[in-house]
Amino acid sequence: MRLPHELQQATEIVDLIGYTPLIRLRRVTRHLPESIEIYGKAEWFNPGGSVKDRPAWNIVRTAIERGELRQGKRLLDATSGNTGIAFAMIGAALGFGVTLCMPANVSPERKRILKAYGAEVILTDPLESSDGAIRKARQLYAENPDLYYYADQYNNPANWQAHYETTGVEIWQQTEGRITHFVAGLGTTGTFVGVGRRLREYKPSIQLISLQPDSPFHGLEGLKHLETAIVPGIYDPTLADANLEI
Figure 1 (cartoon, rainbow, N blue to C red):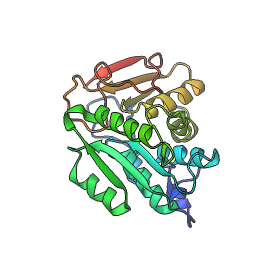
Figure 2 (cartoon, rainbow, N blue to C red):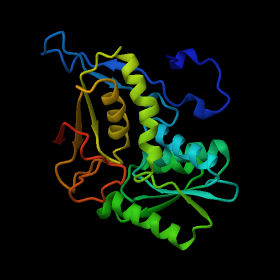
Figure 3 (tube, rainbow, N blue to C red):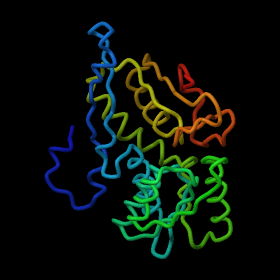
Figure 4 (cartoon, one colour):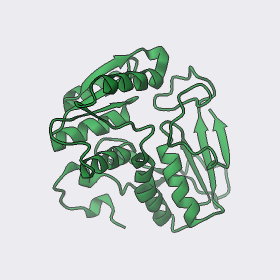
């Protein structure tokens, strides 16, 4: 498998997306038997700094191939931050405009990064969390569909497919098939759904565990309390063996 240090030259920033390392979390398991290993996938190695580079690039690539994102169109979406940063980075690299709706209480550094990439940012009511941003993006698209390509990350199958095609495959290869449990938080749910589906194909006995906040007013950027939020269309509620609240 190709790893970052083996990629000597890239012609586009998107060539650096994926192939992130696993890091063993030894201090987390120091009180457990040596046979128990926990690893984290170091997605901050992606050029945009998060796992969201993967679905953002797959969404953009698919839209370009289908002629949906073309000259004169702006990419539009709702985001809590990281997917927006990924879209803005890719837009700056490939030369298309990006408009993002996001809650006004997102961290200041995310706003600064988006500004640096040249994205247009529309801030929404923080009390409505990401749902308010979703409603605003839908409104903008309904008002001017000729201007925007609406990426719709919460309902776009290219989101989870990115993880099915890349993240899940990488995890399986990096663990040499020894993985027994996979744990991921639920936001758009793309990571959990895509990786989970791929790993279950490889090993039907694998345990898939999802995490979500225990209340609607949780303050955890990017995560959803699904009982009270707009449930993403790509979410598969039958996939998890357990869902833990945090």
